[in-house]
Image 1: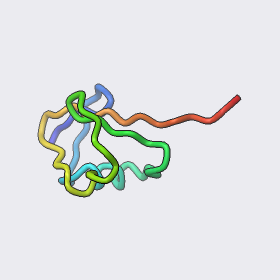
Image 2 (image 1 turned 45 degrees about the vertical axis):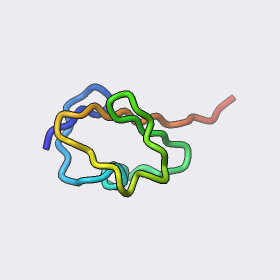
Image 3 (image 1 turned 60 degrees about the horizontal axis):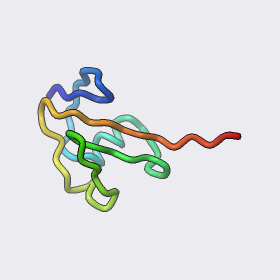
Image 4 (image 1 turned 135 degrees about the horizontal axis):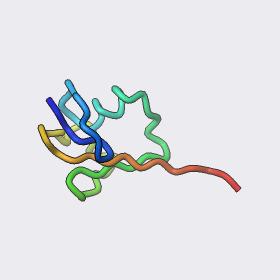
Length: 65
């Protein structure tokens, strides 16, 4: 299905937010996910559906100094 990941079309074959994180090979530490402008708590990633045409934003903290 096609979703929008950080404002770009993305073909996703999974079902849940956790599937998307795994597909992208992202570490869950320091990552936040929003779907259609709603923050999804990390505790709900394994049960929150990613639906066709939804807008997913993944935010990553960056350390530096």
